[in-house]
Length: 216
Ligand code: NAD
Image 1 (cartoon, helix red, strand yellow):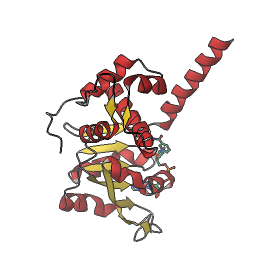
Image 2 (cartoon, rainbow, N blue to C red; image 1 turned 45 degrees about the horizontal axis):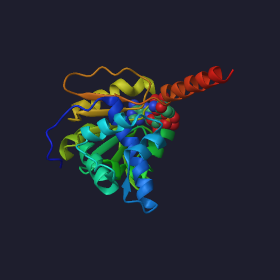
Image 3 (cartoon, rainbow, N blue to C red; image 1 turned 90 degrees about the horizontal axis):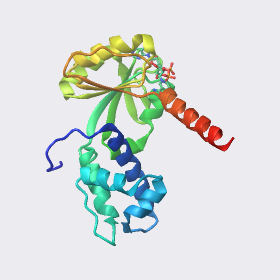
């Protein structure tokens, strides 16, 4: 657990720290120990001051003319993001997306450990998908309560999302990672983070249009 006081990290910084982390892991795998801010700035097409500021937020200071020790930066980012603290989570909706998330083993290294999944489909209930047991949705709230699960992952169809979110909250879940295209209504202090591949793709398309505009 991090010794630093809890703070709210601006979302753009948070996103960049995850990207730096992924890239630094790759550099480490290639045998690199140290990286300079200038190299990071070049690789990410960002301003070096921006990178220095982001790393400062993560409590990392470089050494002038040497740069940053990659292992120290990785450890600080992991501690700041809570990845050293693996959180158990339940997933509801074991379809295409839910099953893919169950099979993504790297999540554990990024702080999420999906320990069980829930569905309505009798053909899925009682089976294991990527080694994770699938239970009936009716078991979700009581099991979450008993196991003190605080994180729920929502991968059900949009029309079912609110009802399933309500069941998660009834079971004591405090944070919902929502993949359904629905604006969930939740009471304080429940937190929701919604993910949309469609929005991310829209950003990509918009950048492509800008590039085309620049070159014509
Ligand atoms: P899918 O139809 O393959 O799977 C849905 C699963 O949910 C099925 O197993 C179904 O039995 C189960 N289910 C239905 N109602 C349920 C309920 N009330 N409780 C528990 N389980 C229930 O769908 P999919 O392609 O995996 O998509 C799942 C969700 O993720 C959808 O809402 C979809 O729009 C969304 N999605 C989001 C993104 C994104 O970028 N966030 C990308 C793809 C899909």
